[in-house]
Length: 457
Length: 108
Image 1 (cartoon, each protein chain N blue to C red):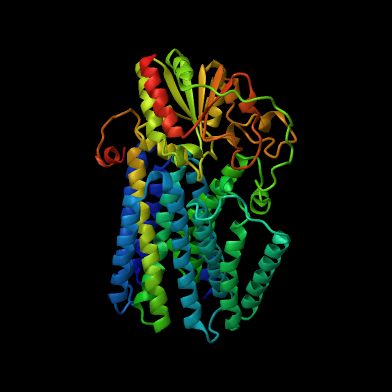
Image 2 (image 1 turned 180 degrees about the vertical axis):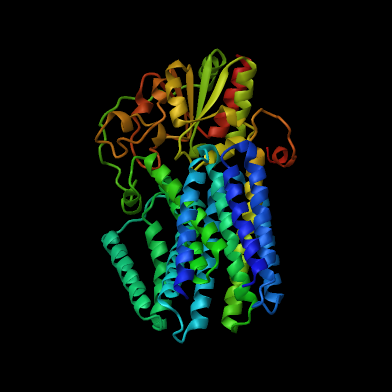
């Protein structure tokens, strides 16, 4: 590879890192992304000058089709569907890596593959395959094409573990003997199957972890491609992506007080009876008009959004209500739990879309001290992240999970579709506390009703 | 592949991992969704590998696989950067301050 190409790759690597550095603050984030875009452009132009490239018709066709599809998705996808879009893009990224891997193996069939290159190629195809189908499964669950609850059957973990060990065995043999091409394609096939089986038992509420993990695998597959074709910019970009996903997975697991193994093999949310605290009394249903009076004369109100806000597309209605309250002199804040929603940062993006300034969005650690001084906490379609059992009941399945302590507010209103349990199927004692009122119905409709009632108060 | 190339690659990997850890740990939870779509777009750099595969005429299968790979990674590069920017445009410090796009209005 010529020096000019290598130099564009070096420039691209630096620009990518500067781009990610920009993301440390919303003010510098857009500029950072422009750096990263310039880096990408340089790397692509540099590559097109590669002397091995002899014809351009397939390249141009791919670039045009890809741009059209990618552009169309990014313009038209609603912000509430961001988790689905991200899952799809993990699948596309991993697909590209696996295809290049298969092609590299195919054209070298004949034995000139060294141990190192073979290891890299196998890793690429293995991680790529798992990510393609795993992400597609996540997409199907997020899109509600199949139910979000875990799908379990007898011997599931044993089957998965056996399959994983067989695949790893093939991987090891291929490094020993790269010419066993039947085994290579069988391994690629098994990776695809394993991706599906791995995500089947994972419930929708655990999707933030799955998304982060797939993000990590997709990145590592790209890094493995870099090793296979000796390309440093690919190694760097893939590693950055892989580590970003890894860091996010750790953060998400910590926010649920669970290990990655527990998320992957625990089938959380399938077992609904564990650790229930028995009879809890009655839930108190409240009327929008009564809550509106409380809100109108409150000093501070904190909104706690959850996935229910996304499904009801209620982010704009929240903002409308907040506007009316702020005009009356009420302080309005938003408390965001790290695993609220279906992917890391999901709620922040939705509220930003509804024009909520990011200075009003607070993390778990920042906001918990404020609940005792809060008049009304409004929980919108969130459940497990405000469940006081996580703090008080060591037998609860979610014991030890850090929660937003809304029960310490003077008054709590929970906007909820119906009387059923949350996604994890765990009873929530918050709903039975004397300071908690339930406002049933579609979150968006309830918020609009509240906004109207506050204006009349 | 020579030992030097392999070792150089491993150095690059290790240093990128450390750097990545440092840089990404500083991204606030506020921006975790844009972070994910941005790293996704950036790892679409595997387009570089796909381009060579699609254009080098190794054999017909490689060309077809390469073409599909170019398409898939272009979706990520173009879509990833566009959607990251669309998200980042929405993050504002002051309510209603400089609305530089009418897109969000239409959506609301």
